[in-house]
Image (cartoon, rainbow, N blue to C red; front, side):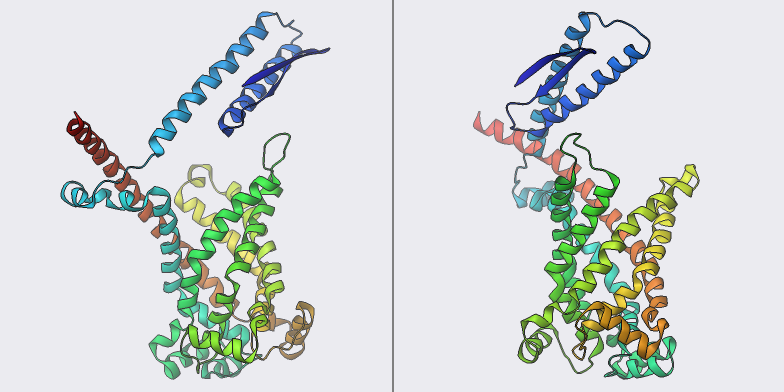
Length: 406
């Protein structure tokens, strides 16, 4: 580790460079110290106070102190992160609550909790989601009784027709690929978001601006959508075609009759709808959150209010693109691009055709988010308890192992 000192004409400053790049912690410590020194210099210059030579020594000592603290934190963190696998029989006998963290680790457990919360929320709101898809695609295809009812009667008759023609299970048609899509989508989103955050971070300041953060979120959403898009196609076909039986049958039919490129139908429209949706959602959330009273702004109810309002704005603005991409995913679709598909919808159904299914979609989003966030919060608390139990048992286990060695 080296520090390079240089003299400026207008004062004293430091140019700090990390030679050993083994960890980013030292780099961040240097940046924090550098900013503190710059603020101190600026304050002294503002009040016309000369900077004594002792300031250089003080600043250097401050940097060294940061290094020592950071090094200590690094050693502690590495020691804490080292997970020891305790025999399952011992955990079952002494501390069952810590089994989850012992078996898979905290990171994996939290990741699976997010996927499980998303899957549960999707399953609970699947009837409304299927109704939305039928309303969106009924103008292009009327294969099911529900689609015919949607054209002739509207929302309520379509919902009733699903139950009458397909039974209770009909409300959950297409939910299996949707649930199967949750985990890979979440995993891809997570890793892609970290990648794009690093890509859009300012190299000079090391900070990620708000536009950069929004761009990272939109890019990550598009990446995750591309990776899991075939499952979205299968889900749609299951939802609108009552003659299909399962995911495998739909996959085989698409490959045999349409070819592999059918799994990319409507992909540009999907990415085009997701990118502005993500950007609007984040921006609207921040703006709405500022209007909420300060005493509940960071409480669950305040966050929920801001989230619901942001979702409504984003969904209302981008919903036409969602309708376009759904119709482009249909087997009967002949539209070559987004513009052609949108013109066809407006020509046959009017402008209102672009917003068909908006009501069930808006109603679906409210319980969907509530169920997802509540489930995730409960599971995170259980994981936290499991981690505490695991750490307690780990200490006892290491103590027993040490005594046996002696």
